[in-house]
Image (tube, rainbow, N blue to C red; front, side, top):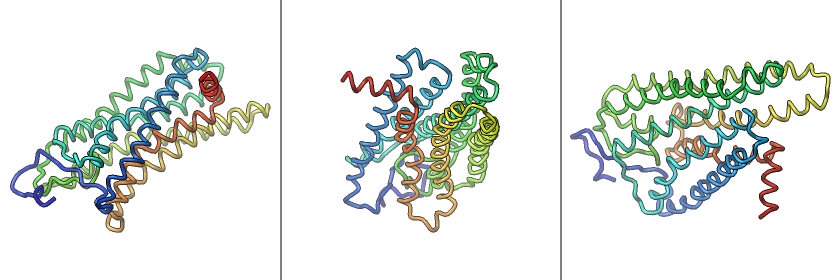
Amino acid sequence: MAEYRTVNNSHTEFVFNAFTGLKEHRRLLFIPFFLTLVSSLVGNTLLIFIIKTQRSLHSPMYVLIAAIACVDLSVPIIIVPKMLLGFLFDWNEISLSGCLLQMFFTYFVCSFQSTILLWMSLDRYVAICIPLRYSDYMNNSTIFKLFVAAVLRNGSFVLIIVILASRLNFCLSNVIDHCFCEHMALVNLACGDTTRNSIVGLIAVFCIPSIDVVFIVISYVKIFFVVSKMASGKSRQKAIHTCGTHLIVIGTSYVFTMMPLLAYRIKSSMSTDIRVLLSIMYLLFPSFFNPLIYGIRTKEIKEQILKIFQKS
């Protein structure tokens, strides 16, 4: 990689340099990541297809499940194909504009993970706590307004992060110790002051996933307070089961979100390959895991999946 390391100019071409510790075995990474990509595509496509084709699943709750499946379908498509080409053929080069474009779409799509989980918690709150007003609050008009607000909020923060990164002078190196354009991996190559980039990144984390999780927690605290007072044991059990499915997805998403953030704070005691793996898992594991959870724990979806396999 020595030929890529120069200090005389600001680089416009970069090279991904992840999992170098595996040396000649690096190509074997193609297999698990290819299987992850295929599993994510099949699982999420099947989930979207079932919800779209079954009229009984056109309620807001299932529309939101389809929305999170769209996010989980998009993320692997954005980052995995380039990774696979790098593992298999050593096609690791990427332009600065291509890197920034990949960064924007990766973070923009991923930002909807927490936003849709927030919408799900609000949907369950209205359905359980104020069921008589459900159709007033949860309808197509409400979902559209929430979507527009999320696009403006999430898109603005991600766009600012990308614009600030584009203005940096990359004269230290053009070797990115990652296998996709992760924000801090690129910013760390800049030779100027990157304090502003770090601060804006932290503000974005606070204003998107952190605020979302606060409202998610508030919603579920109120939900379980109402559920605990339900007279019917069957209704209580159904509410807990439905909310439990969402909480499993929420818990998994936020655990994997915190991993790369913590990894960069303790990077001195963690190998680069482990840090890269945690960043990739944060993006890819929910895409693989969520369809399984919704397919197994959501009765209506599970019944439709079984019908499809029975017909086959």
